[in-house]
Length: 339
Image (tube, rainbow, N blue to C red):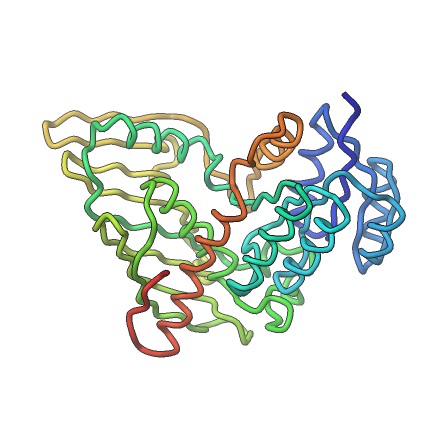
């Protein structure tokens, strides 16, 4: 078959470290366009990988007519660009959070349906080997029912990671809309939904700005109740200046599973009968040590095989709803039902 002609929109860190190299490494893909308002960034990737550089997204869509588009732009642009790409007949891979309101997420899903194109959301945590292993263990039934959990994601913040450092769009509310919750919290709301194969029914959230010089949130601690009854906590932070953390612990009827708590043994299972299993299954990516995300290959595979993507628009919408409810809880001081 002919190669899938892909355009990457937004040439910041997530494109540089994940999308572009992973597309370049996929035999089914031809990179045909790069878009960034800082044209030099787009030109740099075009010079390395071929294709054309654009500063304007709409111009690129009209001139290139790509088969697929990766939307790696500030949060506020995700919906409008994804919808425009779908309307132009392109499959869409959008970074998380997929949108900044539930109505936007719904409109994106609808646009993909109307145009008969795939919409995938870049929730990479699902593809990381420790999480894949953990899901297998849960499905095996050895741990029994999950009763309580703690899932957290914290690092020093985008000032250490973004291509623009402390000047990044991540810290500008009109572009980011939300801070650590949109960046990290939505990863964990997606992960816990996926791991437990369950939906969040109720959220209470403390969401605030504790240390960064920004008007978006840099920390949150949330309580979650799942539909099946499990309760737990979700933490997102941009102020883990030491002790970066991307871990999940599940306390179950028959024991406990620790994911990402140990540098070598990424999944540890301790059963009530005294059995301890340790699995070295490959690391979870960190900002300093990038692992292949698996997202790009899964997106390309869904196009090649014409099957629904591994992380659908509906998945992205459900995971977004959880963090939007946390903001609502912070604003109202009440528990918020996720419906």
